[in-house]
Amino acid sequence: MAIVPDLLQVKDLRKTFAAKRGLFSRNRRAVHAVDGVSFSLGTGETLGLVGESGSGKSTLGRLMLRLIDPTAGSVQLEGRELTTLSPAQVRAMRSDIQMVFQDPYGSLDPRKTIATTLAEPLKVHGTWTPESSARIRETMLRVGLNPDHAERYPHQFSGGQRQRIGIARALMLNPKVLVLDEPVSALDVSIQAQIINLLKALQRERGLSYVFIAHDLAVVRHVSDRVAVLYLGKIVELADRDTLYGNPAHPYTEALLSAVPHPDPDAAQARRPIIAIGEIGSATQLPSGCRFHPRCFRARALAGGAPGAVPEVCQREEPVLQARPAGGFVACHFPEPVRSLSPDSTEH
Ligand SMILES: Nc1ncnc2c1ncn2[C@@H]1O[C@H](COP(=O)(O)OP(=O)(O)OP(=O)(O)O)[C@@H](O)[C@H]1O
Ligand code: SF4
Ligand SMILES: [Mg+2]
Image (cartoon, rainbow, N blue to C red; front, side):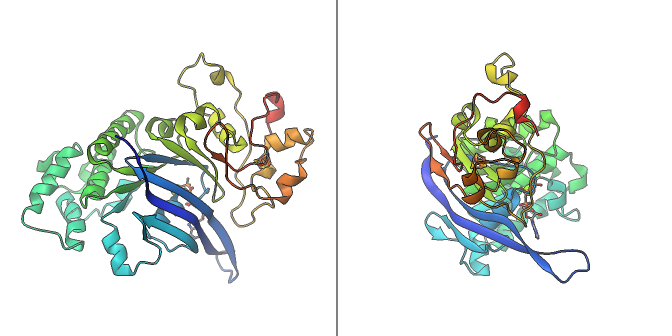
């Protein structure tokens, strides 16, 4: 299906949490969870969103649904601003944009039957009619569940079936956009493939748009048209899938990809060493200039390789996301890989 651009537009979105310094402390510190993120999503498109734990992926997803309010920035769906909607308007907007969570068990009410859970969105939106029971059965069937099990409770289903229930619930209002937050991370590999195939088939049939959040870069490669790489609340690279995986420009993307097994074990990329970059920094004390600079093996190589040395511009100036001749966008002052790096010099 052809992708129609700009169904959803996110502009300079920010979320700063005020978190307590300690259990008994009155002092609060600012956590810059999402720190100026912009992207667009087309109809029928899947945008993969990757980054280490704590990079702000779930916060970004929750902001898009207005499950939390942004500190600043804009989210527009078909040109309609979502960040300024009243609570009643937010409820109405949820028929267009829905979320599927990693842990369907945690997000399903254990005391409610599946029929009750699937009826709820229609009742909240005032669109429940006597024919809606048939719609519940149809939706269950479409996501691969036996409609005769509609009166069962979540604990009577397997993990994969529970994720199918989560997807069915998200589909009940016929949304345009699904934000899928690690939808297969908790499942066995064989079940993961089934759920991904289901999501792809639903997308083809209904023209759905997905924001697909995941740690697993191999899964993201399989499902995405474009991929955005998030680091400490900022997109550091955004490109179409083949450019990003075949020719990454940002050293952080290079490091993440170096740990992913290549589909063809004989390919040259499959023999590249894993680039170790240590732990993610803190979203409360962001480094000056480029927030990746304390971990950047490229900057270190450019500055001569001494521990802690980086080009002055990397410490001083925050790089902005810029178009790259090879395609895509990258936020780096030195946006091409340094091919002469030896494997040893890449490791911390
Ligand atoms: N309600 C909150 N209050 C304070 N800080 C928060 C809150 N929610 C998230 N954070 C912080 O915001 C940052 C981003 O968190 P987020 O959950 O969005 O990351 P993530 O990329 O989804 O991580 P993961 O891969 O582990 O799910 C982290 O530093 C996290 O500790
Ligand atoms: S701007 Fe400098 S520190 Fe940041 S990623 Fe690029 S080379 Fe590394
Ligand atoms: Mg998360």
